[in-house]
Length: 393
Image 1 (spheres, rainbow, N blue to C red):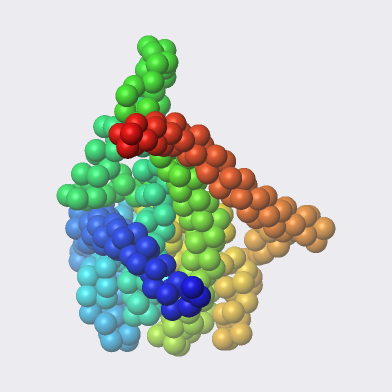
Image 2: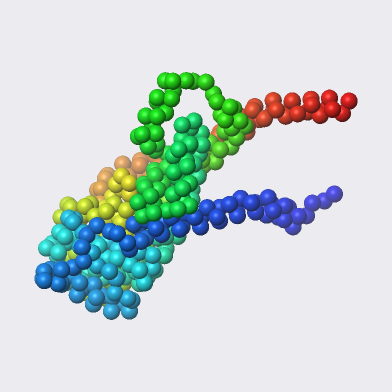
Protein backbone atom coordinates (compact mmCIF):
# COMPACT_ATOMS: atom_id res chain seq x y z
CA UNK A 1 0.00 0.00 0.00
CA UNK A 2 1.27 3.45 -0.93
CA UNK A 3 1.79 5.74 2.06
CA UNK A 4 0.83 9.34 1.37
CA UNK A 5 2.69 12.39 2.63
CA UNK A 6 -0.30 13.49 4.68
CA UNK A 7 -0.30 10.15 6.53
CA UNK A 8 3.42 10.49 7.30
CA UNK A 9 2.89 14.04 8.57
CA UNK A 10 -0.07 12.93 10.69
CA UNK A 11 1.82 10.04 12.28
CA UNK A 12 4.84 12.28 12.89
CA UNK A 13 2.69 14.97 14.50
CA UNK A 14 0.94 12.40 16.68
CA UNK A 15 4.27 10.93 17.79
CA UNK A 16 5.68 14.38 18.55
CA UNK A 17 2.60 15.60 20.42
CA UNK A 18 3.52 14.18 23.88
CA UNK A 19 7.01 15.64 23.65
CA UNK A 20 5.69 19.02 22.51
CA UNK A 21 3.20 19.10 25.38
CA UNK A 22 5.95 18.23 27.85
CA UNK A 23 8.21 20.96 26.43
CA UNK A 24 5.35 23.47 26.65
CA UNK A 25 4.70 22.59 30.30
CA UNK A 26 8.39 22.78 31.21
CA UNK A 27 8.70 26.08 29.32
CA UNK A 28 5.77 27.56 31.24
CA UNK A 29 7.24 26.43 34.56
CA UNK A 30 10.64 27.86 33.66
CA UNK A 31 9.08 31.15 32.61
CA UNK A 32 7.35 31.39 35.99
CA UNK A 33 10.61 30.65 37.82
CA UNK A 34 12.57 33.21 35.80
CA UNK A 35 9.95 35.88 36.40
CA UNK A 36 10.53 35.34 40.12
CA UNK A 37 14.30 35.76 39.80
CA UNK A 38 16.08 39.10 40.30
CA UNK A 39 16.60 39.32 36.53
CA UNK A 40 12.92 40.03 35.85
CA UNK A 41 11.53 40.85 39.28
CA UNK A 42 11.51 44.32 40.83
CA UNK A 43 11.35 43.02 44.37
CA UNK A 44 14.28 42.98 46.78
CA UNK A 45 17.33 44.33 44.98
CA UNK A 46 20.54 45.67 46.55
CA UNK A 47 20.62 49.45 46.83
CA UNK A 48 18.49 52.37 47.94
CA UNK A 49 16.14 54.87 46.37
CA UNK A 50 17.61 58.28 45.40
CA UNK A 51 18.04 60.60 48.36
CA UNK A 52 16.44 63.93 47.45
CA UNK A 53 18.82 65.74 49.80
CA UNK A 54 21.85 64.55 47.79
CA UNK A 55 22.31 66.62 44.64
CA UNK A 56 23.78 63.83 42.48
CA UNK A 57 21.01 61.39 43.41
CA UNK A 58 18.31 64.04 42.91
CA UNK A 59 19.78 64.74 39.47
CA UNK A 60 19.67 61.09 38.36
CA UNK A 61 16.06 60.80 39.54
CA UNK A 62 15.18 63.87 37.47
CA UNK A 63 17.01 62.51 34.42
CA UNK A 64 15.20 59.15 34.60
CA UNK A 65 11.85 60.93 34.85
CA UNK A 66 12.69 63.22 31.91
CA UNK A 67 13.73 60.35 29.65
CA UNK A 68 10.66 58.30 30.62
CA UNK A 69 8.41 61.22 29.71
CA UNK A 70 10.26 61.67 26.39
CA UNK A 71 9.78 57.96 25.60
CA UNK A 72 6.12 58.05 26.71
CA UNK A 73 6.50 55.19 29.18
CA UNK A 74 5.76 55.00 32.93
CA UNK A 75 8.57 56.25 35.15
CA UNK A 76 10.62 53.22 36.27
CA UNK A 77 11.79 52.61 39.78
CA UNK A 78 15.32 53.94 40.47
CA UNK A 79 17.88 52.25 42.73
CA UNK A 80 21.38 53.43 43.61
CA UNK A 81 23.51 50.30 43.97
CA UNK A 82 26.93 50.11 45.68
CA UNK A 83 29.99 50.68 43.51
CA UNK A 84 30.35 50.41 39.76
CA UNK A 85 30.54 53.01 37.01
CA UNK A 86 27.69 51.52 35.03
CA UNK A 87 23.91 51.33 34.90
CA UNK A 88 21.44 48.58 34.02
CA UNK A 89 17.72 47.91 33.88
CA UNK A 90 15.67 44.88 34.87
CA UNK A 91 11.98 44.03 34.90
CA UNK A 92 9.20 42.07 33.23
CA UNK A 93 7.76 44.80 30.99
CA UNK A 94 7.61 48.57 30.75
CA UNK A 95 5.06 48.68 33.57
CA UNK A 96 7.39 46.96 36.06
CA UNK A 97 11.01 47.96 35.60
CA UNK A 98 13.90 49.09 37.77
CA UNK A 99 16.83 51.24 36.67
CA UNK A 100 19.96 50.42 38.68
CA UNK A 101 22.60 53.16 38.85
CA UNK A 102 26.07 52.43 40.17
CA UNK A 103 27.23 54.90 42.80
CA UNK A 104 30.41 55.54 40.84
CA UNK A 105 28.39 56.64 37.82
CA UNK A 106 26.98 59.64 39.70
CA UNK A 107 30.43 61.24 39.91
CA UNK A 108 31.92 59.90 36.66
CA UNK A 109 29.37 61.51 34.28
CA UNK A 110 28.12 65.03 33.80
CA UNK A 111 24.43 65.68 33.33
CA UNK A 112 24.49 65.39 29.53
CA UNK A 113 26.36 62.09 29.65
CA UNK A 114 24.00 60.87 32.35
CA UNK A 115 21.11 61.65 30.03
CA UNK A 116 22.74 59.60 27.29
CA UNK A 117 23.29 56.56 29.54
CA UNK A 118 19.78 56.71 31.02
CA UNK A 119 18.25 57.28 27.59
CA UNK A 120 19.86 54.02 26.40
CA UNK A 121 18.18 52.13 29.26
CA UNK A 122 14.83 53.86 28.76
CA UNK A 123 15.01 53.05 25.04
CA UNK A 124 15.56 49.37 25.89
CA UNK A 125 12.39 49.44 27.98
CA UNK A 126 10.38 51.26 25.31
CA UNK A 127 11.62 48.89 22.57
CA UNK A 128 10.32 45.86 24.48
CA UNK A 129 13.69 44.38 25.47
CA UNK A 130 12.25 43.26 28.83
CA UNK A 131 9.80 40.84 27.19
CA UNK A 132 12.32 39.75 24.57
CA UNK A 133 14.89 39.04 27.27
CA UNK A 134 12.39 36.90 29.19
CA UNK A 135 11.52 34.85 26.10
CA UNK A 136 15.17 34.39 25.18
CA UNK A 137 16.12 33.38 28.72
CA UNK A 138 13.25 30.87 28.83
CA UNK A 139 14.38 29.27 25.57
CA UNK A 140 17.99 28.96 26.71
CA UNK A 141 16.91 27.74 30.15
CA UNK A 142 14.82 24.97 28.57
CA UNK A 143 17.83 23.43 26.84
CA UNK A 144 20.08 24.09 29.85
CA UNK A 145 17.56 22.36 32.12
CA UNK A 146 17.59 19.27 29.90
CA UNK A 147 21.37 19.12 30.18
CA UNK A 148 21.22 19.71 33.94
CA UNK A 149 18.63 17.00 34.55
CA UNK A 150 20.63 14.56 32.46
CA UNK A 151 23.69 15.22 34.59
CA UNK A 152 21.72 14.60 37.77
CA UNK A 153 19.79 11.54 36.54
CA UNK A 154 23.00 9.78 35.55
CA UNK A 155 24.58 10.45 38.97
CA UNK A 156 23.83 7.95 41.72
CA UNK A 157 24.12 10.62 44.43
CA UNK A 158 22.24 13.43 42.70
CA UNK A 159 18.73 12.54 43.88
CA UNK A 160 18.68 15.31 46.48
CA UNK A 161 19.84 17.99 44.03
CA UNK A 162 17.24 16.77 41.52
CA UNK A 163 14.48 17.11 44.13
CA UNK A 164 15.69 20.62 45.01
CA UNK A 165 15.75 21.54 41.34
CA UNK A 166 12.21 20.30 40.75
CA UNK A 167 10.97 22.02 43.90
CA UNK A 168 12.47 25.30 42.68
CA UNK A 169 10.64 24.93 39.38
CA UNK A 170 7.31 24.23 41.06
CA UNK A 171 7.57 26.68 44.01
CA UNK A 172 10.16 29.31 43.08
CA UNK A 173 11.32 32.04 45.42
CA UNK A 174 13.62 34.94 44.59
CA UNK A 175 16.60 33.21 46.22
CA UNK A 176 15.95 29.76 44.76
CA UNK A 177 15.27 31.21 41.30
CA UNK A 178 18.57 33.09 41.45
CA UNK A 179 20.28 29.81 42.36
CA UNK A 180 18.53 28.11 39.45
CA UNK A 181 19.83 30.78 37.07
CA UNK A 182 23.35 30.16 38.35
CA UNK A 183 23.03 26.43 37.73
CA UNK A 184 21.53 26.84 34.27
CA UNK A 185 24.19 29.37 33.22
CA UNK A 186 26.62 26.41 33.40
CA UNK A 187 24.42 23.28 33.42
CA UNK A 188 27.26 20.77 33.20
CA UNK A 189 29.08 22.10 36.28
CA UNK A 190 28.41 20.08 39.39
CA UNK A 191 27.98 21.68 42.79
CA UNK A 192 31.00 21.47 45.06
CA UNK A 193 29.05 19.79 47.84
CA UNK A 194 27.61 17.29 45.37
CA UNK A 195 31.07 16.53 43.99
CA UNK A 196 32.34 15.83 47.50
CA UNK A 197 29.40 13.50 48.14
CA UNK A 198 30.13 11.68 44.89
CA UNK A 199 33.79 11.19 45.85
CA UNK A 200 32.79 9.82 49.25
CA UNK A 201 30.28 7.44 47.67
CA UNK A 202 32.83 6.18 45.16
CA UNK A 203 35.25 5.41 47.97
CA UNK A 204 32.49 3.61 49.87
CA UNK A 205 31.14 1.30 47.18
CA UNK A 206 31.49 0.67 43.47
CA UNK A 207 28.57 -1.76 43.24
CA UNK A 208 25.60 -0.78 41.11
CA UNK A 209 22.23 -0.42 42.82
CA UNK A 210 18.98 -1.87 41.49
CA UNK A 211 17.93 1.63 40.37
CA UNK A 212 21.04 1.94 38.23
CA UNK A 213 20.43 -1.47 36.67
CA UNK A 214 16.83 -0.42 35.93
CA UNK A 215 18.05 2.81 34.33
CA UNK A 216 20.61 1.10 32.10
CA UNK A 217 18.33 0.76 29.03
CA UNK A 218 17.67 4.53 29.14
CA UNK A 219 21.21 5.68 29.85
CA UNK A 220 22.15 5.96 26.20
CA UNK A 221 19.20 8.09 25.05
CA UNK A 222 19.20 10.18 28.25
CA UNK A 223 22.90 10.99 28.09
CA UNK A 224 22.66 11.69 24.37
CA UNK A 225 19.66 13.99 24.81
CA UNK A 226 21.44 15.94 27.55
CA UNK A 227 24.62 16.24 25.52
CA UNK A 228 22.76 17.47 22.45
CA UNK A 229 20.72 19.92 24.54
CA UNK A 230 23.87 21.38 26.09
CA UNK A 231 25.59 21.50 22.71
CA UNK A 232 22.67 23.21 20.97
CA UNK A 233 22.13 25.67 23.81
CA UNK A 234 25.80 26.64 24.17
CA UNK A 235 27.03 26.63 20.59
CA UNK A 236 23.89 27.35 18.54
CA UNK A 237 21.12 29.13 20.44
CA UNK A 238 23.29 31.27 22.73
CA UNK A 239 25.46 32.67 19.89
CA UNK A 240 22.40 33.36 17.73
CA UNK A 241 20.63 35.15 20.59
CA UNK A 242 23.81 37.09 21.35
CA UNK A 243 24.04 38.26 17.74
CA UNK A 244 20.38 39.28 17.81
CA UNK A 245 20.88 41.06 21.14
CA UNK A 246 23.70 43.09 19.60
CA UNK A 247 21.20 44.57 17.17
CA UNK A 248 18.99 45.48 20.15
CA UNK A 249 21.87 47.43 21.68
CA UNK A 250 22.40 49.34 18.42
CA UNK A 251 18.68 50.10 18.34
CA UNK A 252 18.78 51.33 21.94
CA UNK A 253 21.74 53.60 21.09
CA UNK A 254 19.86 55.08 18.12
CA UNK A 255 16.71 55.57 20.19
CA UNK A 256 18.77 57.23 22.93
CA UNK A 257 20.05 59.76 20.41
CA UNK A 258 16.48 60.50 19.35
CA UNK A 259 15.45 61.00 22.98
CA UNK A 260 18.34 63.31 23.91
CA UNK A 261 18.93 64.86 20.44
CA UNK A 262 22.62 64.77 21.37
CA UNK A 263 24.75 61.87 20.06
CA UNK A 264 27.77 63.17 21.99
CA UNK A 265 25.93 62.55 25.28
CA UNK A 266 25.78 58.77 24.85
CA UNK A 267 29.21 58.61 23.20
CA UNK A 268 30.74 60.45 26.14
CA UNK A 269 28.98 58.15 28.61
CA UNK A 270 30.26 55.04 26.80
CA UNK A 271 33.81 56.38 26.87
CA UNK A 272 33.64 57.33 30.55
CA UNK A 273 32.21 53.96 31.60
CA UNK A 274 34.67 51.98 29.49
CA UNK A 275 37.70 53.89 30.81
CA UNK A 276 36.64 53.72 34.44
CA UNK A 277 37.56 50.05 34.73
CA UNK A 278 34.91 49.42 37.44
CA UNK A 279 31.87 48.58 35.30
CA UNK A 280 31.86 44.95 36.52
CA UNK A 281 30.67 45.84 40.01
CA UNK A 282 26.96 45.78 39.12
CA UNK A 283 25.13 42.48 39.76
CA UNK A 284 26.36 40.00 37.10
CA UNK A 285 22.83 38.80 36.27
CA UNK A 286 22.11 42.31 34.90
CA UNK A 287 25.06 42.23 32.50
CA UNK A 288 23.07 41.89 29.27
CA UNK A 289 20.85 44.88 30.19
CA UNK A 290 23.67 47.23 31.21
CA UNK A 291 24.83 50.28 29.25
CA UNK A 292 28.29 48.75 28.74
CA UNK A 293 29.02 45.03 28.78
CA UNK A 294 30.49 43.62 31.96
CA UNK A 295 31.72 40.29 30.64
CA UNK A 296 30.64 36.81 31.73
CA UNK A 297 30.89 36.39 35.49
CA UNK A 298 30.34 33.35 37.64
CA UNK A 299 26.70 32.92 38.34
CA UNK A 300 25.80 35.37 35.61
CA UNK A 301 22.71 35.70 33.52
CA UNK A 302 21.70 32.92 31.16
CA UNK A 303 21.81 35.47 28.36
CA UNK A 304 25.42 36.37 29.16
CA UNK A 305 26.67 32.76 29.13
CA UNK A 306 27.60 32.64 25.44
CA UNK A 307 30.76 32.03 23.45
CA UNK A 308 29.79 35.11 21.41
CA UNK A 309 29.81 38.41 23.35
CA UNK A 310 26.31 39.87 23.67
CA UNK A 311 27.59 43.45 23.39
CA UNK A 312 28.99 45.00 20.22
CA UNK A 313 32.54 46.35 20.58
CA UNK A 314 32.59 49.90 21.91
CA UNK A 315 34.47 50.99 18.82
CA UNK A 316 31.61 49.73 16.62
CA UNK A 317 29.02 51.48 18.78
CA UNK A 318 30.96 54.73 18.60
CA UNK A 319 31.27 54.44 14.82
CA UNK A 320 27.49 54.08 14.63
CA UNK A 321 27.11 57.14 16.88
CA UNK A 322 29.58 59.06 14.73
CA UNK A 323 27.29 58.48 11.73
CA UNK A 324 24.55 60.14 13.78
CA UNK A 325 26.74 63.17 14.50
CA UNK A 326 28.91 62.26 17.51
CA UNK A 327 32.32 63.95 17.63
CA UNK A 328 34.00 61.94 20.39
CA UNK A 329 37.24 60.12 19.77
CA UNK A 330 36.75 56.34 19.59
CA UNK A 331 37.47 54.31 22.70
CA UNK A 332 39.53 51.90 20.67
CA UNK A 333 38.98 48.65 18.86
CA UNK A 334 38.20 45.50 20.76
CA UNK A 335 40.76 42.78 21.38
CA UNK A 336 39.65 40.80 18.33
CA UNK A 337 39.95 43.77 15.98
CA UNK A 338 43.44 44.48 17.34
CA UNK A 339 44.68 41.03 16.37
CA UNK A 340 46.60 40.53 13.12
CA UNK A 341 44.47 39.53 10.15
CA UNK A 342 46.17 36.13 9.93
CA UNK A 343 45.43 35.37 13.58
CA UNK A 344 41.80 36.49 13.19
CA UNK A 345 41.43 34.17 10.21
CA UNK A 346 43.01 31.34 12.22
CA UNK A 347 40.57 31.85 15.10
CA UNK A 348 37.57 31.93 12.74
CA UNK A 349 38.80 28.76 11.06
CA UNK A 350 39.29 27.07 14.43
CA UNK A 351 35.76 27.98 15.49
CA UNK A 352 34.39 26.56 12.21
CA UNK A 353 36.40 23.38 12.75
CA UNK A 354 34.87 23.04 16.22
CA UNK A 355 31.41 23.14 14.64
CA UNK A 356 32.36 20.41 12.16
CA UNK A 357 33.89 18.22 14.86
CA UNK A 358 30.84 18.84 17.07
CA UNK A 359 28.55 17.60 14.29
CA UNK A 360 30.70 14.51 13.81
CA UNK A 361 30.64 13.89 17.57
CA UNK A 362 26.83 14.07 17.54
CA UNK A 363 26.74 11.48 14.75
CA UNK A 364 29.03 9.14 16.71
CA UNK A 365 26.95 9.62 19.86
CA UNK A 366 23.79 8.66 17.99
CA UNK A 367 25.42 5.39 16.94
CA UNK A 368 26.83 4.80 20.43
CA UNK A 369 23.48 5.60 22.04
CA UNK A 370 21.68 3.11 19.81
CA UNK A 371 24.32 0.46 20.52
CA UNK A 372 24.21 0.94 24.30
CA UNK A 373 20.42 0.95 24.36
CA UNK A 374 20.26 -2.14 22.20
CA UNK A 375 22.81 -3.92 24.34
CA UNK A 376 20.77 -3.46 27.51
CA UNK A 377 17.39 -3.97 25.85
CA UNK A 378 18.21 -7.16 23.96
CA UNK A 379 18.58 -9.25 27.11
CA UNK A 380 15.13 -8.45 28.63
CA UNK A 381 13.62 -8.65 25.13
CA UNK A 382 15.10 -12.12 24.61
CA UNK A 383 13.84 -13.25 28.03
CA UNK A 384 10.36 -11.90 27.28
CA UNK A 385 10.39 -13.63 23.89
CA UNK A 386 11.40 -16.93 25.50
CA UNK A 387 8.68 -16.56 28.13
CA UNK A 388 6.02 -15.90 25.53
CA UNK A 389 7.13 -18.93 23.49
CA UNK A 390 7.01 -21.08 26.61
CA UNK A 391 3.53 -19.84 27.50
CA UNK A 392 2.41 -20.49 23.93
CA UNK A 393 3.41 -24.12 24.21
